[in-house]
Length: 76
Image: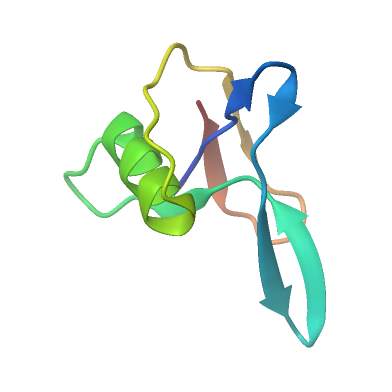
């Protein structure tokens, strides 16, 4: 499972730039949820680790299975 942070402030969305297979892509901050870990906690920790931005979870936006990877994704 992956915890994904959708961070919005003043109508701006926080994204991170990742390099995969040589190509750059813009994505929401995210991290793998280890067994026993809370999806909400992982979301806040990964957002800070990847961007330096302090955040808080307000609500669960939804979940889905990624159509390409088959990974379960929790959006916060």
